[in-house]
Image (tube, rainbow, N blue to C red):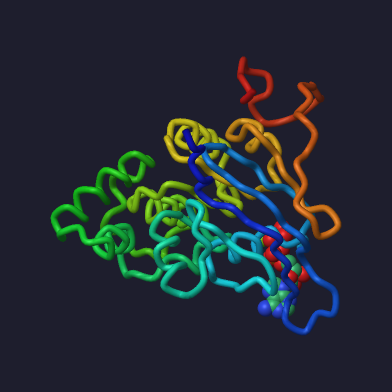
Length: 243
Ligand SMILES: Nc1ncnc2c1ncn2[C@@H]1O[C@H](COP(=O)(O)OP(=O)(O)OP(=O)(O)O)[C@@H](O)[C@H]1O
Ligand SMILES: [Mg+2]
């Protein structure tokens, strides 16, 4: 029996930013099948760039992106790849472009061939699952930062991708909505890679952690269970933290 190819594989990816002398990413080798991965690292180390390379929005100087064992050679290949991956942008304003929330969330399913009725049904269901039942007719550009983040997530989930690439999904979310998002992500079937600076969020949603260190992607040592003093407004009431 042959082992199935990873959903996404990166082989020897090297990338330099335009106008920069030294490379940003070097010899990146990585594959993902079913895992839930967290990606951490300092500002500017290349996390978002790595997602853009996987999606074919940036072209590596060297190396290959493979989808289910097939190297993506051209725009057509990456178009097929983008149908299987859902990319949540770091900045939601880059992701949302339709006048209303429903139009934005239905755009993906319509593009993938759903009828208008099906697209509406999928979109309503997706919005409801994210706690955004009454948002369908809201004007997208007037939403708050956190609302935009959740609607942007809905535009991705409505396309039922096989892998989610989420760039800082918990940014701008209040503590309650952040907890709700953790529950939603834990309940999804898809594999995901989440970029975040929120280590507790990653501890609750991911099984492995990676970082970019000296231009290389490296797996972090296993998580250590630990406790630390913390403070928040409801700290005197009984409460739980994610494990
Ligand atoms: N088009 C470009 N031209 C020149 N430099 C660029 C370009 N795009 C990105 N960079 C640089 O590449 C580096 C990596 O950017 P990237 O957005 O991948 O970082 P990041 O790890 O996601 O950081 P953050 O945690 O702040 O989101 C940054 O120093 C950025 O200024
Ligand atoms: Mg980034």
